[in-house]
Length: 431
Image 1 (spheres, rainbow, N blue to C red):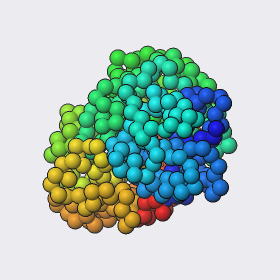
Image 2 (tube, rainbow, N blue to C red):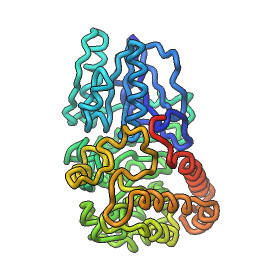
Image 3 (cartoon, rainbow, N blue to C red):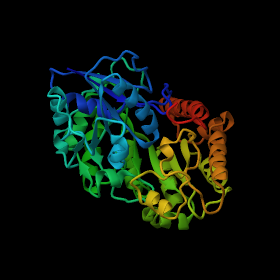
Image 4 (spheres, helix red, strand yellow):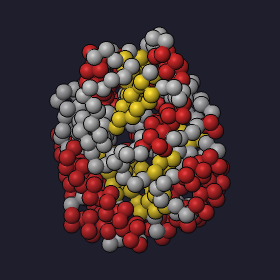
């Protein structure tokens, strides 16, 4: 029996910013050796036109949903069974079922084995529902699935799942629930030790979501002498002892969700941790520790205007952020934001992700204080300006890109981001 696991891309072509999906490495150890399991990531390779297999399983997020549905219809027309899983099928299961033979709701650890068994027995069920309570100590990775695939030399590992915050635009809580589960520190350290890459990234949505275990984690990974990045919240960055220790243990970059410079917006999105925090202190601590900042922002809340993106751009340039995202606010299904905007009749389309005329970077709703076009154009302008060659050079001089290795990471991320932003902007999803 042969099963193909596929990660669709946004437009059906390859990208320069593709990152190896941990799901591939998780599924391999969960699959019986007698099953021929093959993996295709459309971001780095083409899917064979004459793909021969018994079933296709696709991992799908909201931005790749339309592409996944296009592929699913092709495979089903060829008599291949299709299983869809991931964030989007979990939160839009009825929609996904219109394009698939089966849908997975939630995690893979307690569903994949049963799916493989049912494929072999020709008794595939319509829905496989995870309890989202897998024993984190039993998760294993087989990194051999990435051999021969042209990803950047960046490893990935996961310490925990879930997030202690509940921002109204974020789908993490809708997928994982309110709890945070962590893997044993020893298992995480062993994964890192066995990685061929010298640079890795924690895929956790917030590495410091479980503060009680951070000391043990840093103690374990410090001696491994690897460089790494992670996602942290503003409250963690305000702790100077913690940022210094992160740097001493190899951290060179951290993604931080600033989200907005406006207090009213932060209250509306439920980002109380940012209201209680001090951006200046957090930035100062990161700069002093020598950790590059990857700042993320969402633009389009009710207090935002067509000038907000430019204001945030000036903030990011002033503080010499190594990387920054200027994202138009996107109402994704399953979030309080989506339900609120839908109840207010402000969605431009209920299922914007499946619309043939929706382009990457477009607005999906009607903002209060600007037009949808002004929102999209202002975010686009901020992205283009931040990643202009002139601003990349100016930021490199003060972005904590210390040493040749860090400077190389800075240059690679910025040049790839510049290329991909120009390539993606305005393109229709799925095609």
